[in-house]
Length: 485
Length: 108
Image (tube, rainbow over all chains, first blue to last red; front, side, top):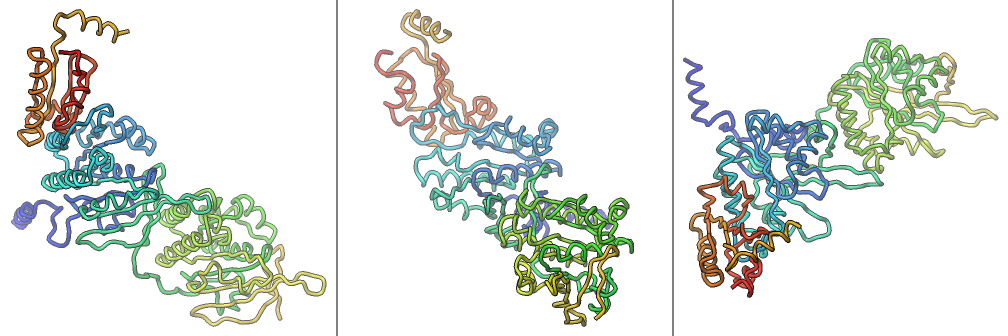
């Protein structure tokens, strides 16, 4: 009885898409983008996707169509510029095989390139195209459509007024059919293209701009939602990547800080340092270890790593300075045996060349590792190398977002920062992130009486008492040893 | 090679070849009506008795439009004599249409 009633209500509401609350939306299936869009694209309405050449518009649209095709929303791709064969091939390079979907009538690629030799004499309209689409859409019960690209269609017309007129006619047609539409349009930094196509922004219910920019010779992709009628959305610029599995947008998961409070004390692995910290680090804290090269940053971090792994906790070590192999062998000298920890799977060391990829790709890999490996602790060695991802700004972005992700998950996050000058104290800020760092430890090497002496100091330890003195320490073959004062 | 053969055939026929046109229109919308009128007039004036016009309404026969890659209306396709020619629009510019269809001067 109750079920029948629910079903009847469901029919009245026009299926699950039309919920009473808020705007009906359809998922794009693009990781992260649905989050930014608060659920997806506006159902039965038009979304404009603008971007320069090679920015990834077509791939983004295609991924959305494919997601629809796989979830009961067949789609049509109208291509004014590309050949269907080329699109199939591009899709294959991302591991998408379109053929089965095409065979099953879930996806239709419509080659709509106009005959370049056609002579134009007098006015015309795109009624032919609409007639073809009408027939197709009805036959396959299409729910989604992508028009790639609107500017190619508009180039046909010789006056801005007629461009507009035709686009409005197309828009009306799409709305009448209730198709969820993605229309792409090329933008160019050189031309005054944005103003020419500005009316498209007004027409569409949702406008997304994507671009690819090069900072310090490293290309990064960015996405921004410019408008979304009747819906809240993430208003920032979000990095995204295109890899062998498609597009991934990396959103900041929420606009409020959802950091977990600091947890109980956890041993730093070094009894003397634990005393200085009144028992150790706090779980879920962010820790910054600063020092010149050879000061013992990695040794101090690995002391913590070893202790954590021996307690049975998982640690992710992101190394931007050296390979796992070389780290394992160099840590043998201060008596830290990491290999068995890697073998048992408690320690995962990922080594990356900072300049090998853009910041968003680094971020993607790091966040994926957090989700897959679920570590209790993360170490980044060293944040000074992260500048090579592009600029100090990109490094800041990477570190900030990784730190946020760790804080949200209650993961202890240790950043190592290599100071270059003598004045280590002023360099301890660590690319401007020091304000959200809970614990800062400074390592120094000082020439005293013809020998280098090492000392360390706890500059800051949020939520905990700590010593404010410099304490001499040695690195022995049994680890770090604090010299008793 | 092929083209030259066609050329010979064309001149071999007394009185010239019959012109075959396909005109794709969208119902009776203004541009389509104009195109119909313009084409009929041009044919009467230049190739009277030697032409055949097949009008296709894309609103009724979308498949034909699709098959011939007709995305805009009106679209005129000269099927014969080869080579095929495509003209888009209401055919208002008579001189341009005649030139495109190779109907300037000597065809009379």
